[in-house]
Length: 48
Image (tube, rainbow, N blue to C red; front, side, top):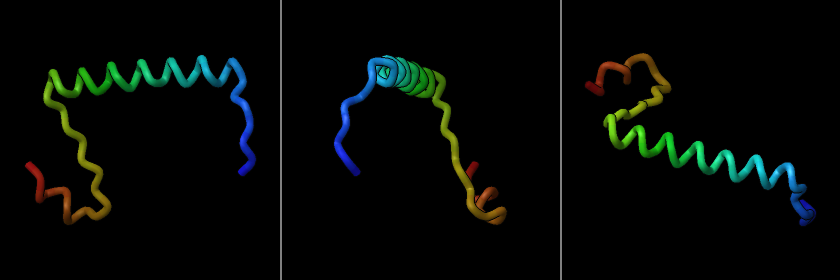
């Protein structure tokens, strides 16, 4: 891939996404939420 400069719009969106990710992480830690992604139906029952 060629190196190219980011547009101002992309920089703003990236900054907003970063803030959203931080808030989601904080909320998950506060409420102790874990999300498991199962690839197989048999594995669903292994986690409480």
